[in-house]
Amino acid sequence: MSAKAIPIDFHAASERVARALIGAIVTVDGVGGRIVETEAYDREDPASHSYSGPTPRNAAMFGPPAHAYVYRSYGIHWCLNFVCREAGHGAGVLIRAIEPLTGIDAMRQRRGLEPLKLLCSGPGRVAQALDVTHKNNRMSLLEAPFHIKPPEQAFDIVCGPRIGITKAMDVPWRFGLAGSKFFSKPFSKA
Image (cartoon, one colour):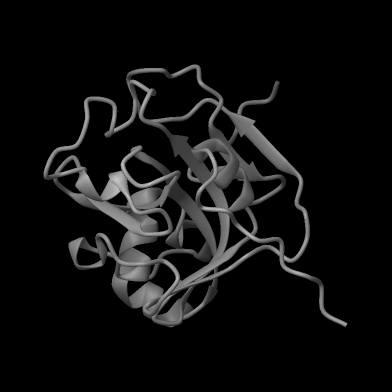
């Protein structure tokens, strides 16, 4: 008997979606793994790309929900976000790290012969390993090449402040699968 998947409501607030995605399986063209680290961003959040309203760069973040928002960080790395809340709001969840499960040879070819632990530990590494680029921006997460399998059980989740930002650094909207070895950076001990 298989466990019942816990559905992900992409219309929910970004922090709820970020938490719900922990333990979900994401693949792009069959390459992917378990989501172990996320960060939530919302329109009222000064650290969010949507804070100052829509622009050509961040337009995908304004919906509809359950679509990809892909942007380049520091002009170097692509980053994958899952859009949430209602269309026009401007909220998303950054996929910070996954535990590689399928297509590991393809990931290594794209990333180099990294140790398994480092293949997808960080948003730029996730995008590179999954071959996510601007071509995936605005794509539905509910159709190929994406496949998201919700968690089949509840996982223990750790949370803490987001990292790599300069505003709203104390907001505890970074979520992780407790005990994972695949985080981009360790969570602080409380």
